[in-house]
Length: 599
Image (cartoon, rainbow, N blue to C red; front, side, top):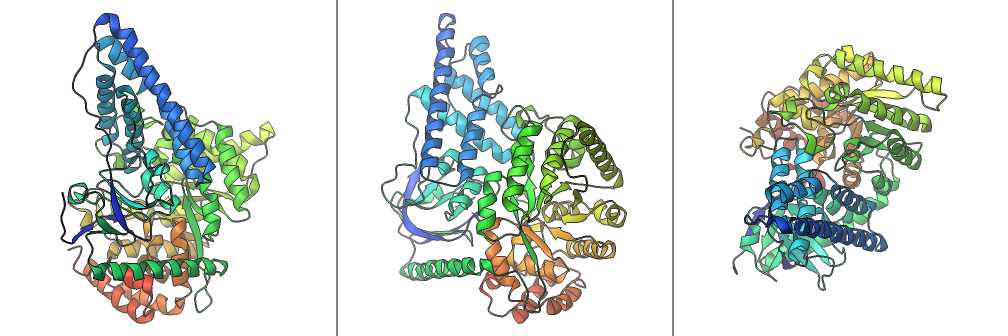
């Protein structure tokens, strides 16, 4: 459809920067196929046809991995492709498809489509992290399906012209195959911030916006488009004024990024001499170079559940040990805080083994799952203790809701220390232990918890969700997910006070830490350690070097007296505009907190 009128669409920005260029529409073949059967004498032939398609898919992924490596792309891309190779061996996909061919006499294509539907149903009831991993399963199945059909899988690897990619969705392997010199940016109708596609877009530093509803039907091949990844906007058929504005914005962004990188050598110190520690959140060991690149002082949150995703067998103690030690040694002496895995469900590691829970966020997840599955938990804790010989590793328990859970976890940890000592294995007996504060009960019992911990880490994503009874993935009530809600701010401040009384540090590792406005609010409440996505660190560092803590402390005291979200937002905008005037990143951040929102 061709439309010469200007169209502005809103989505979710998952990286940074501005892209201006002509659209290249990217289509993928459908996975739904009509029912088909084979006669009995052809069953073995059909099974072999499926096996050949899987073998060809494996070859394609291996070849893509080699080309990605030869281009010197980020290691995160290679890790995603490695996960895809493991998925090809998954019994739920491979064996189940063959079973349907043999027992139901389904054609290979139809059998595979049935398996994909079964898998989709299993993923539907899982937390966001796993639901977004379904894209990896779908990606693999699409490649197998194309090979069954003898269809060439469309690729972004061989683009001849610089383009903005528009698609209903992009599979992780599509993103991994992108050439950074040809793909200016991309926009998709679906997708989330924690998907592999989003992770890879950030690794490749490609401007991207996801969740842009209906965009595939509103653009045509070669339409001129603008992507504003930071604001989450896509403009189709921009006016001459738009082009002038965004070219200037593009130039300013490039200049600003260069300036921010130059400032990476400076410490994050406020104008009145207070040091704020900036740390990085990571999912893969391969992200260590990115942590260093952006000047982070260590890792404040290593999400180890990514080690368990897309594999049928849990990683061994030695595999985990080597992974943790690799990160710790590369970043030494800076701290590396390893969160024990935050998985959910009923006694499962692999998502396809999950028993769907009615409400997985209130179910058997995180520390509850670990304590219910002690062999897995013991293996991970032993690996962390051994890697702790580097002396810069710390342990972080997720979703602690009270003293009983903390005692159970610490008792197990102490028994494992005794086991390692008896075995003569080198480890760190004095390793620091912290707890994620992300449920109201932990806030209320913070003083009871503090005596058995070395630090607190506030997980604002879940704390907001549990405190306000809001599922931020539910579009109908997502507007109620309010970081500046007075209850949330008072909870954070109370944790800071407990930390001061007990002499233990308190950090924030949720999305609030990486938001320019929220980061200043957190500092005003007494937070002195912030952990965030690595690429956000230069921006937050720049803000820190522009503020006075003494002024922010007074601002924070007054903010805590606000009784409504609307009043809090208005106060934040007015006061920070006065305290930090004309700061570009804060000014842009104010737009994310419209005073009328959240009613």
